Length: 59
Image 1: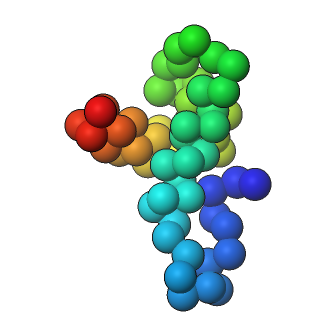
Image 2 (image 1 turned 90 degrees about the horizontal axis):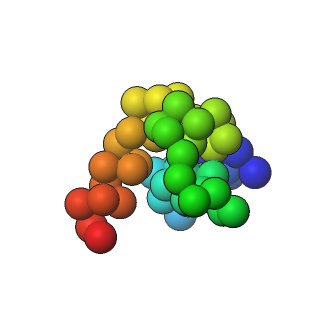
Image 3 (image 1 turned 180 degrees about the vertical axis):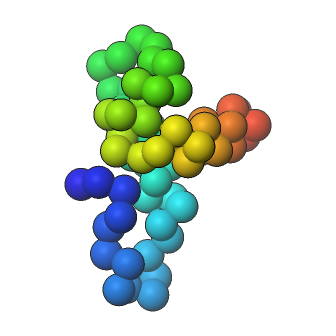
């Protein structure tokens, strides 16, 4: 899908879509580096890092 989604929809949450893309990067992977997660999710490393930080803080 990519992390952009349908931004024309006012109900679309781009930050949530990005976080889900990062989570999907880990499907079937026991662990990934931030660079690997960024490459697989299609996001840049800073965005991937922010998503991972948010997930870690909420776990």
